[in-house]
Length: 368
Image (cartoon, rainbow, N blue to C red; front, side, top):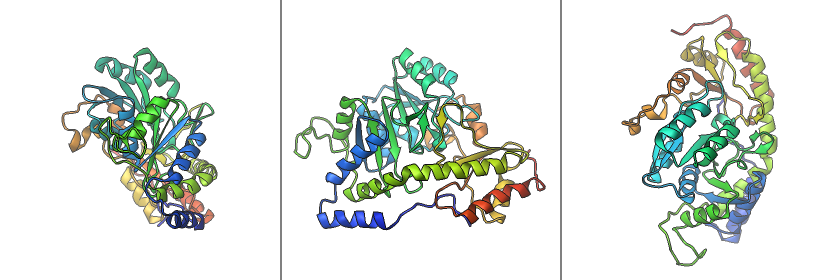
């Protein structure tokens, strides 16, 4: 079965980790500082702060911009639950705006409505599946409503908005380096920002609230969200390969689109003008066919597929009592399906994946 995700590791990562082990500074040493600097440069941002994982990056980012109890943050209900969980971990309240049915990202008009209704202190946009949200419109809303614009880019390493790298068009942007992402450190995360004050507060928060680097001056409450040097060493190698891996993902996505765009009842992903997709996931909508039927058909042809995400966040048990008027997100959650698009695919794999939808044309099962 061709897997939906396949982390890429090689001898370079092994050598990099071995070097850190020989050096002995394995917890939060110079390797982490180098990784922070190199990743910030890649994002065209002034500062980077590494974290233990992507959720820690989101939480620390919110703490760094001063979001806390009594505050409201508007975000999408169609994302991995960590987007909203981080808001609650910071003591704030998530409010959900609906999404655009083609891009799967925050719909600006509804976002403006929810920001105004809740007097929100921030917007947390999610670049879902690797496609940037409508940043110009969201930035305009944030400026008009005196709200911070934050981004969850856990799936968007290498994406661009109007030519600018993701990470350069918000007050702060959080990334994840989980194994399934476009690049990985095993577990890990990063926040990038152009504001030195935000970066300093995040760096303090992830290191127990320290304000004097490695000393014992704790002027605020913090957490142990530090990234290890071992993980950073892997990340530095992966970052070197990221541009090529993103191009490979885009080439594979183009082949997949040519395959599925003629199949009745299947809608391929879109790439709106000015938004460069990084294709963390290649996600179609099964609008005229049963999703289960499509997934079973792909499995019969040796192609793995997965649903990200079957339940909108406001419908999860952990979010009982959090109401949302998000009919588009609820509908999209019923019909999305992700196909393999990772750089570990061989030419034979791609041929098998692109051939599978052709057979669907004659095996159509219209959904109720």
